Length: 357
Image (cartoon, rainbow, N blue to C red; front, side, top):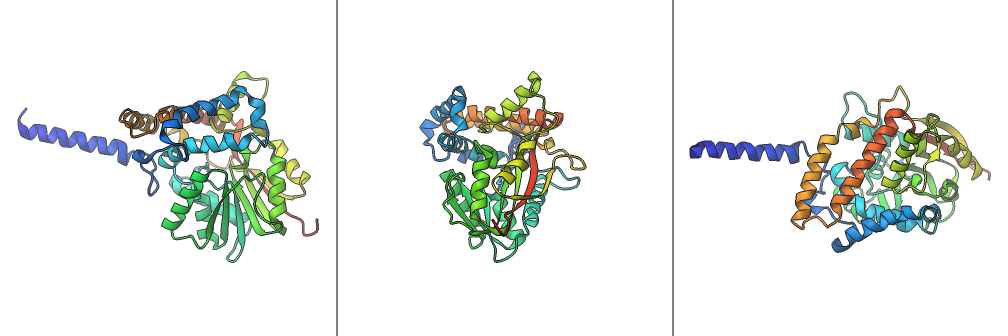
């Protein structure tokens, strides 16, 4: 083979690798690259130990059903997964129904804007994001409604990432992020004009506790919408396959235990809310939310290969490969839950705090 042929072969190989890792690559969202994956607030040398600690929680399941243990459990989880989520999924850590002709990013934005519309968010209002992550929904809702959005997350690293993204998006004047536990919110009574939670309250050991906090901080007459993770009416506790799927989702997403769809409205009423609307947004005519996971298997193996290389080179912290594999296994359980219809991540409930309580 002459030198020109070698040059062309090398160029084609380089172009192929670039396409595989970059063009076909993960949904990097303005600033998070594979070489920057970390353990959040966990030092690099402790990532593997924290991963083992996370799994040890499931050896003592009663501990993750208490308000005292959940903060450490969830905080550890999000330190481990936040960078991987951002790198491989985006800044909005939730699902949305697929929309024909729309990209995943567009479908996500529409799903978020619907929450803003349901609570009638508008300029001048102060809106609470309950479990804001790195602030993807917050920025979309602030831009869509013009309202001031305050997000709360238990994870300090996510606070840092959210503030960075807010600055880059030039929405600091509309978006504020607070580090805190949504079971004990650091806000005065009757201080928000509306609130929403998008696939976040599933981390609460008891839904009553977080709903009671939301109720407390809302002004009388204010609206609250939540997209809840639930088991549906198709779930059968006596079927081993169903149980395996749900337990896989719980273990891979730091959940104290998934709730039944039938418990959501009852809980909201128990803490004082008026329930205005309840609907599983995953049901037809919505298109499947889980197809994005199913279509991402090639992407997983590409990303897994890349993280393997980065881990071997010492760029990615030791233990990152285990975390990535855990998330892939969880994606399988989520896909199975969606395909069989026994699980929904978007059971929507719209509530109002009565004017007279």
